[in-house]
Image (cartoon, rainbow, N blue to C red; front, side):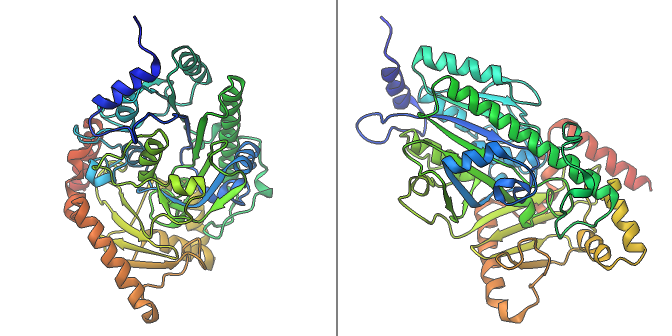
Length: 468
């Protein structure tokens, strides 16, 4: 005799390590569709007032809740995804390099929801290790497969089991091959942290085209969901990941590097057409989905559920959000550069661990950035300031994000803000201590957290530098 899906779920809850059903009866359990962009600056999205055309995201925002203060704990793909799927900050989980490899003891949302009877499937970009920590069903390698969603929807209908489907896109990650022709370079509006050169305009136009291609993907997935009749019982969450590869975004702890779009639709539970200024983080997603599913939060998690904000029962969530960046694993050997950051409702504080070292990233060798350097050498003051600021960082940075969203004016030396700076530094130090983050010592140990392929790349870079 077969058991009903609800009884199977109840048994799974009872056996799940660290996860318990809340209340005497299993609550109605929604399904989840999580859509994740790749290297997408939040403020480039039309939904957030940016120049990219995003009609499907605009529609989703009109039907749900838009967060304007959502942040990730790292401006790098792999640690961002690990923290999103585990509810743990990067150093604690071990996944703080890029590519990242979590400790074997870590558990992800796949474990928690599978134990509660959920189907769990990740389609598209993975970039998380090891598979034992992330035991999803997998499909695709670069882009989400709509057919995989169709299959999960069919199996969910036949079995009565809810699902988590993660659609992890590789758009608008460089190269911007799919964005050609959608935007005219001479018509795009550049941000204040860009130098107006033909190379910049061509790159930005291609990138915006990729952003619109991501929006198209969202539209296809929503159409498949609705065609299957699952719109009303599925919580849809769309996130933009860290910023794009343009300077002052990805690889940095500035606002453009860490701020994420966050759109949530859950008919009947999340009020339509609403916006929230609550401070939330990617580590909060796992406990939020678990609470929505009627499951208790495992004590090990760093994140806290923001479900009360979703339903309108609360308007605030956290007082501070945290982040780290390391170039370990993403560049061919030293010099490496570690950054730590904390933000409250208004100010962002940044601690640069090795300010004596010039900062560099893949963007530093890009033809676009080279065109900025040429402009700077020719006497363009705006170009000179941006080139200098990107490569040379002081030990401390402080920005008034309310007045300076692009983090252009460093206020760390402003004595009128000395108390603000000291308070944020104390918060950051306490967070690092709690996470086991020893700053530069943790940076130097990072190579051991890398997959072997990345360790080989680091060793090769070190040998070449010593040979010089």
